[in-house]
Length: 368
Image (cartoon, rainbow, N blue to C red; front, side):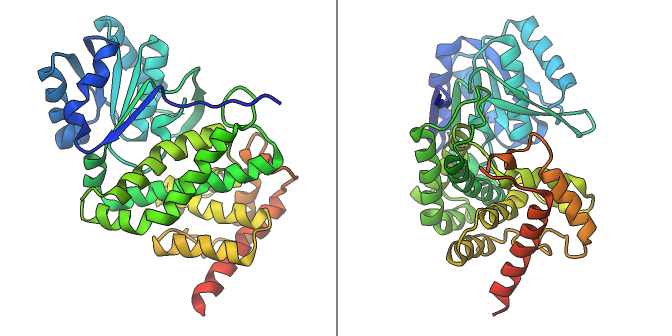
């Protein structure tokens, strides 16, 4: 058995961290690129730029076009080539991060990820999701290493709408559910090495879940009021570091495959975030592995309290036909999906039955 574990070289988290970020970046060189979109630039980007330049770094501000597409990657790569950039910094959300990782990988320069949201676990991972210029999914890009530095300013995260933190909690909640599924099956992880879990990776997934159940209520209250507390610190770490490293080094199963399977349909379901879709997928994963009533109730209650989808109505699919749901199930179980890490054969019919069961169980739970 060959196991593997991967993580960012350095992860730093703290309140007002942007003000002192230069000391963590300077070892990479004296000049580089800051990639951020116009909205983030207006909120925190210009201040961050000034902090860096006032501390002696030469920074070229490059406006992110909004899509992590091959064309955008090529455009920014050319700017980095012409300026002989020694590093590249991402300040923004998932697509900004993914583009930065791709450019840094191609230029072979250090990658610094500075997330402005805790809505997903992409900042710490060694992969990017690529889309066309029109926003259509193209492929995943896998890299030889994780980002060199991840800087998380908790004051910036707290300043964002609380819905983004809840999205990240939903995504993070799937981490241990899927990790434990993969562990039982002795299947491979997300690392492009065909390797199995280390105990370290599995321990991070378990710690991620422990923090979510222990501190989420306090953290949501703090983020709703845009304040930073120890509880919020714990949940930000769970959403970004523990979920990202835990999922990548422990593997995915049914929860994320279901999220992908929903692309079989059109309509309002796609107004939901990645985390919201994965939230229902986590419940599906639990049903497929035969979780007890007590366990399923625990997770549904947790998600329901946060306003996450636990029924087909919550997914805007209350009027979906059985034929539509079977399409979702078929795409969920297509070749190459992580649902095949369950350790047993999962058919489209199994997924269809599981979807219906989650919906009925949840409706019954809250009708009493």
